[in-house]
Image (cartoon, rainbow, N blue to C red):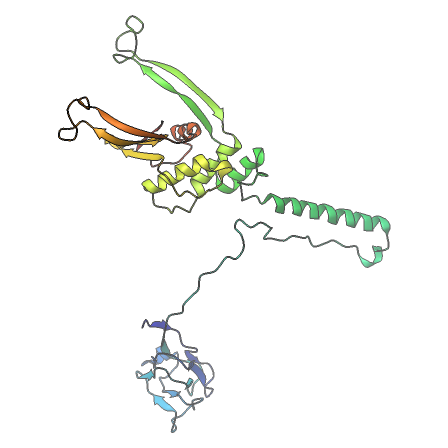
Length: 354
């Protein structure tokens, strides 16, 4: 059985001659130490401590009160059904004690309501203003107070209905979404880029007589677009979703990709299948993310001793193909390429679809 250490009820006789409780019944034992030195007793001179396990201890030795001299130890009995008391002749007599008992079993808090909460969890009504007694019969003053209270309540109702931290809500959009993302989550709306920058100059990258030797030229075909609210919310969820834990691994990455593709407006749908996402690790820290749109199953292959002659051609393989709904990967590719989606910077990331 596990045993934990607990503090005593009291570790000082505040008033000399008045007993204090050291331990209640039902403990698994423990001990009381009367310090050896007067300095540790916080007294001018060291003196005995008096212990009684039957009732309030006396400031002197009796048939039930035990004198615990400086430097001595009193051991508490286990599973005792009585209170242990202590007393001393001088006020402020300090001593040490440790109680043995079973560890406290804390129960997890059960959240019985929905999360995010469907209703406001803060103040729902303002404290109304009122007029002083000498003005409460003035119609103009009463009308002003009523209008003020109504306006204040409208402000509070508006803020409660917005529920600003829940950016997936349809009411959080446009400039308000930018304000929430910047102010609460520290993120700005990124711009996504599509297209590539081709560098011409090495062999087989340009036609002869169009570029001088040992020179390079950049051929830019990149289009920058402003990220809409839907994609911006998906990017926020990519960064702040905590359900997958904090340790990066292939499972973490594949689940985040599927959540980004399927989570409209940054919602977090249940991801129970990531078979359409393939992650391949290459040399020089190259990582390729492939979004699969079909599955091939090998039926037959022309290796030796596996087929009859004149039935298959050499190096022939037969597959059955099952086409599945392709994933919408355009925004994912752009977001990873521009760095809008955080990934380990030690690797070079490539995303393909097909």
